[in-house]
Image 1 (cartoon, rainbow, N blue to C red):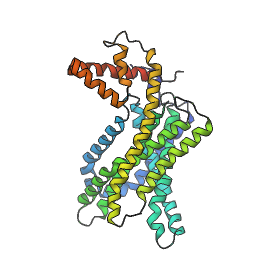
Image 2: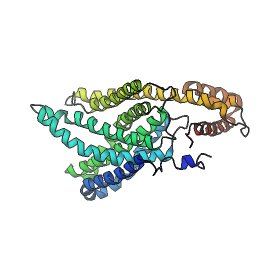
Image 3: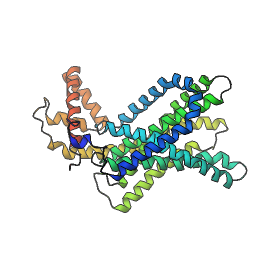
Image 4: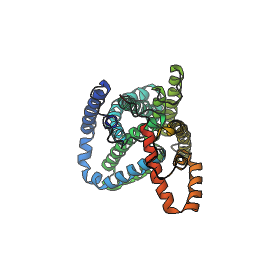
Length: 357
């Protein structure tokens, strides 16, 4: 259905756009850059890293599943999300490598009494990494402008850019831990990977998902159009939320005491709450769009009528309530059949938002 549409097939293959060539060039250069930067470490720990590949894959799949929970209305563009992941793991990673060292040196030299060394990660990390991930988000959104047209698309693209960055960072940290562990390469890398996987629920993918919504607003990819001034202010607000989540996470405050350990779950919960409200805004806009276009769909081939199909547009609470009642009245198999048709219905609704021509 959607895949046969020429607009969708070419949604990211856009050699007619300068931004497409910039993206491809950056992926090639930055991909080569990170490969050269980490080649020696990867070679020295190749057995350990190969052993941990299943864990890396499982971690990535878990986070992908979590991200897609925020997309109940099928707004995802699978190929674009893959490209976003690649951009995050190459462009954002390499640009951050170049910037982090320079900012580290500035912070260390400016702050006295060893404070610079303590605070360098909190300042350098979000400054270079959020900026570089934001650059990838903007490029992807500009290239696939015909299909990435609402805040939820910014959320998803941002999340996958951040996840690409996060997964490469996990591998690099595992490599460094393997090299530095005097007893066992595998145990050093394994302990680091497990810890980063556990706290990864509130890591780069989350910061970038928040910033991605801000990028969508900045690019005017919203249902309710806003003035340029308001778009810029909202973008700055979303960017600063993502930035300060990262800053506070890297902050050394309380890190040397038991308070620091207790603060980790507090920060994780707080970041998830912030993400919830950001996703809630994006989903509210998505429901508004779906309700605007639901009368444009030809339902002659569907078994169920518009009233039942459109229940898929309800918010999560009311959707679950409806499914519970429907299952009780009609049975499990009938509910399964309805959900299958609702998925097709949602895909058709999503297709109406594609910019033609």
